[in-house]
Length: 252
Image 1 (tube, helix red, strand yellow):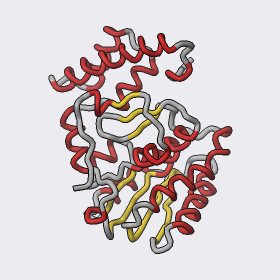
Image 2 (cartoon, one colour):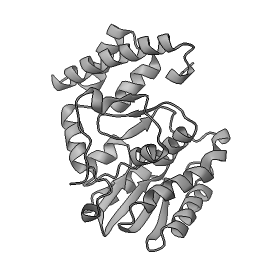
Image 3 (cartoon, helix red, strand yellow):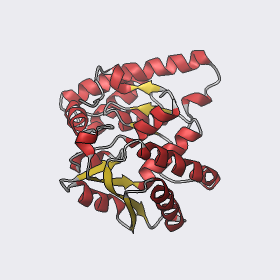
Image 4 (cartoon, helix red, strand yellow):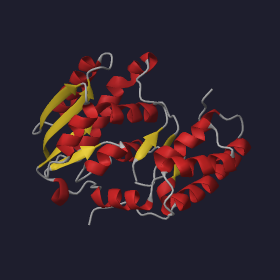
């Protein structure tokens, strides 16, 4: 059984396990800096700290090599008109949507060492979570309304996911209604990551995704899940950027 920290029975247990993850984080980052692969470093700290599957996944999702972290931080743009004005915003649909659903449900979310908010809920939208979709679309639209510096928004989704056409059309309708002067469209494809990367390589694009492969190929990243978390005033269970002494980018 996979469990989240919010499911623990006592605050004392939570503190003990969080402390274990913190210690494992320092060792994991050190090993990565010494040239260990992600798999090798993760195996070492898993054995040393007896991490369970949830904690192991947490490190894998939220802690990266120093090179990756700093390169990603340089790509991040916030609500800075002089930076993002007239650019194309590309949204990795289910990647972003599932984290917003996790925020609504008050599931465990984490601010990772690249200043992006991630969750560990898995990559599939569950049937019972569909009741949160309308609220998720409105939250995303409200967050993007604060920017209003994009001429165009393209939402990219996986057509192999059940109800994907219905879901992506619903979001684009909400965005079109709320972002009056922005052209909003969508692409459904069997290769959403590859399609997102194609757009990410364009000089004028800004990508909203927490997928590390997509991030590495992108020129600029909009930390959309982080902006949503801040707007919802949700506190992440762990802030790995602060833990590792990294400063998240701000507008100049």
